[in-house]
Image: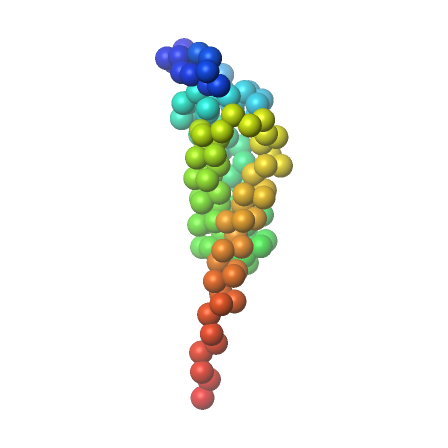
Length: 117
């Protein structure tokens, strides 16, 4: 097993990726908060396809959806690493991805239409 890291003031053993793949979302969150990059990789692999599909439905643009999904996971990592709040991971990811998807939509709306001769 990996080195121990602190999570919520206690030491937890960091688990190898083989033990993380079948782990519950709660265990993955605990491991991410303890500093496990492998746990975040498993979390990403588990939810990226769903988050990307959600972003694609909102944005209707593959490139913008990829960016929004990537930003979702960057924000998720930051929030998980710096918060001890209890979360339900899957339902928590969707408002994050919705927020990240709304930015390109509002930017498009704010841009004036090009003058058509």
